[in-house]
Length: 138
Image 1 (cartoon, rainbow, N blue to C red):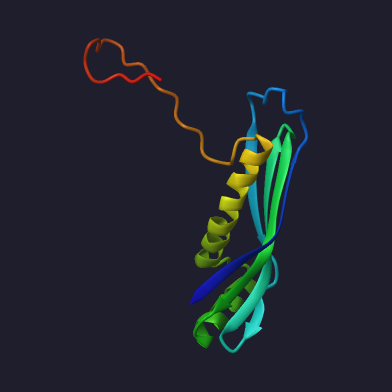
Image 2 (image 1 turned 45 degrees about the vertical axis):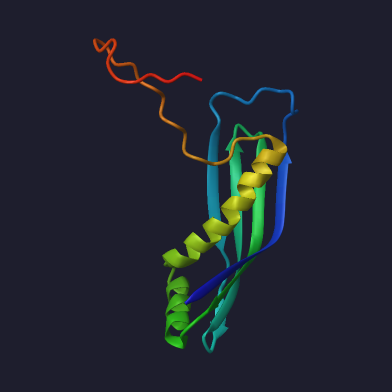
């Protein structure tokens, strides 16, 4: 089965001034909504929306597009049947995420807000082990 994602619209808006510092308790949420996917004879198409929200509300990013599926008729029919029953096939979500997330990262850079990446763990100090191991500084 082949899944193609076509981005049709991107929108990014920053609600705070560029010189204002970002809040320390910033939470980022990402939602992927897939509209009705219809098709027959081994082909299907539908719409999707990738929405990034920030709390407190400092920015909003949306990516809209189309998803095009082609393959064996029984595979495409099964995908449509799964979607109608409320199950989201993993290949569809992965394809939308891969295409949409690259757009989101570029938009985040353009408007100066952090992308929705998992935070890096804070470094921990090891007590009682002075002189052992490696240290790095930047």
